[in-house]
Length: 350
Image 1 (spheres, rainbow, N blue to C red):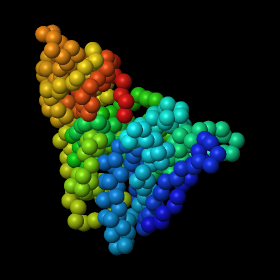
Image 2 (cartoon, rainbow, N blue to C red; image 1 turned 90 degrees about the horizontal axis):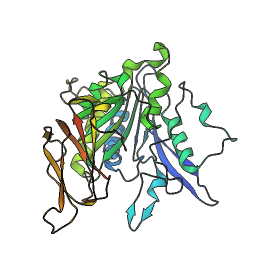
Image 3 (cartoon, helix red, strand yellow; image 1 turned 90 degrees about the vertical axis):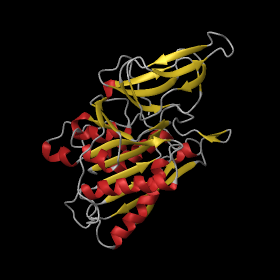
């Protein structure tokens, strides 16, 4: 295992950012390869500790000659966001300067060639240079996982519909509760950009049967503890074994996926009609029926009509909910995977 340091120039003199990259050379040139990154949103830490726990498994496998496919691992992918502290709290989803989401604006390349992302004549900002660098690091790998988390939620993934149902083994290996798939080009999310070069490629280049490209949501932001880190590391390791990147006879055979799989258009984004204190009546993982009370907004405390009830627009599965207990009008409350197309406008902010 080799460690290198990637450096990103800041947007003012004397400022720069760096992050470590770990590489493992595989023993078989024909084996699938893997790229893992975590904390692109710097404040989302479950993936970082999962990779930390995974590394000891990989070091052992490497020492025993069981790493078949090459691997590139970035445990903390966003050093810019990690520096954005305000009143003692990290704000790692958006770049303070450009106000752009760190998981938006990745280049949608038409071919699996990262050379257009480099060049001294290219003028860019630090956050965009970081995105280009991460794309360069991930390019060419068969398995590309971007590890995130929700505010509060069950574990699930986003993936391109072209990979469903072949990607079901990923969800099974990681013990996920749901898969959301879509062919929408989105707004340049990392996972969308990672699969984009292969969508129009020839079958010999695309090799979609061996690709796993997904945004993995490891529960909620507070779900950071030793037990979950080990469980998620075991899931990642299980996937690497099932897909042939690592060899390990101690890992059992592939298991069928028993969770939810739905198109992204079925996702209901529940938003508040007013500001106030949020009282949730359901939690992630609950099943709801159309018309069920899912939340109450206390907007005028003490008044007889001082609260507003929020009800499920259709039957479905509660995927996530916001961790804050005060909301403004239009604020996100929760996501529900419906049994049919969404009755509300879908705008996914991950």
